[in-house]
Amino acid sequence: MIEMKDVWKTYNNGIKAINGIDIKIGKSEFVYIVGPSGAGKSTFMRMMYREEVPTSGTIIINGKDVGKMKNKHVPKLRREIGVVFQDFKLLPKLTVYENVAFALEVIEESKASTRKRVMEVLSLVNLKNKARFLPDELSGGEQQRVSIARAIVNNPSILLTDEPTGNLDPETAWGIMDLLDQINNRGTTVIMATHNKDIVNTFRKRVIAIDGGLVTRDEARGEYGYEN
Ligand SMILES: Nc1ncnc2c1ncn2[C@@H]1O[C@H](COP(=O)(O)OP(=O)(O)OP(=O)(O)O)[C@@H](O)[C@H]1O
Image (tube, rainbow, N blue to C red; front, side, top):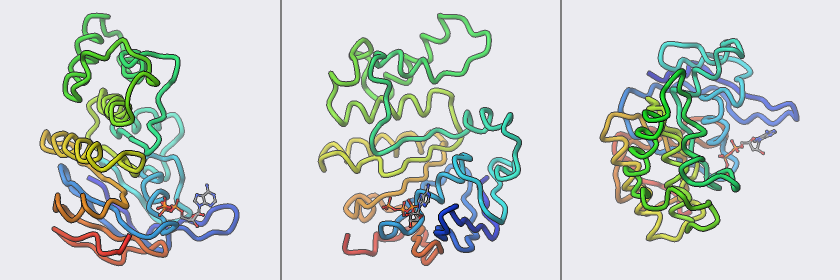
């Protein structure tokens, strides 16, 4: 469902971030993206949801060439791909409920069905009782759970998470990992760029290592493989 063919990315400042990547990721896989800082992991992820466009090569997501896609088709692509960041990116003046509802792209859906879906995902992330809270009234782990709820509210087939545990203490990070695992078990493909060695070495999944803009390792049940 995700395929990169000979993908290269050079930024306008001349930095060669991705230097010829070929990769396939199947439906319902869980993949860690590991590698040193500046290796190209975020660039690799950003190209999947068309935040960046490859300089050359092809990226196919669910049968569509995202590099060549017209801008008017990008919103539809983004409904198929949920994204979670290290710094949560919640809207500070909206409640937990509103943050999630805001992302729900429903066409002619009734208020009742919006409410049902939002409460469903808040219940999945175990935050139903904090629906009326503002983001700054929540702990970091809770805020990350809201951002995961927001990312999955449209039922995307792919969830991209860029360092989702980067700002969290180790115990909270395990909770987030558990949640991502649950989401994956429901059939969503999860791609997680991470520097969290303990998580990668404990919850064994496919590991794709990126270094210098190239895939240097791709193992079915791999290890983190760096000293951190
Ligand atoms: N918007 C941008 N414009 C120019 N150069 C960029 C941009 N984003 C990233 N780069 C450069 O591209 C290279 C790869 O960066 P990228 O953020 O993809 O790495 P990363 O592996 O995600 O790093 P980290 O683990 O530190 O987040 C780096 O040299 C970085 O400076």
